[in-house]
Image (cartoon, rainbow, N blue to C red):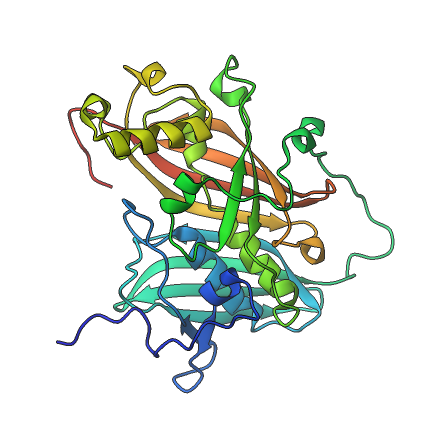
Length: 346
């Protein structure tokens, strides 16, 4: 058999006129095979230590594929997906879009991502025709916490060297973690704050669709990890007992990463439960102001968890523009199992 190939077609050179996230999420149309079938143009990112490819990449590409099949005056407002199997970055993904419904105000699409003939991811999303709600309508929105702007990063912010060294050189987005101020509160009352944005400048050619795909990509970042943070669980890829024996360089990196997280010193984690498995099960996004999304500008995200138990957890995320506009609300449920003597399988 031949060597594994991460794409069906040889990837073209990077388009320097586009943002890194546009290149990362580029799709290839496979209409020669059948209608509404697409594939990843470039190899997708597999985070170090993860079970499969970064979930946000598949979230974003399924949305991008669905967006290609709707009329230009329709925008996504609702997106609901399930992670079925871990994706393999060395194998191409085929995205099959089904046009479920075509209405005057709403249209519905399902997208299935497949590898080696098996579904690894499935989504249903709904699009609404702009302005179809009428001139009069009820309106309100949750406010961005006033203290958020006090921790906003400058426009010329550059991530710390140690953080960039641990990422892919072409990582398409960057984040700025806010220091927690609610460590004294119970888990259900804690909030995790961060600022995120796509690197570079998203092209005019990409339009609002590129910004929405970028937001979808970013929405999966550190999301289910909210559970480990608010419970102060040990989640690093080295056992607590092995930390004293780490090489100085590895210990220095771990200390800097932990300090950047802001949830206490390594010593303060002594005796804390350790994460044995943490993976996403499903992911939903409600887009409130699709045309207001500018994913290449700083967006503020507030994450919280109303519940965790029985080896699972639910997290919620509100995403705001810097001017305080509520852009989207996302939800995710995931497996959060702690290390224990008996290891059950999914």
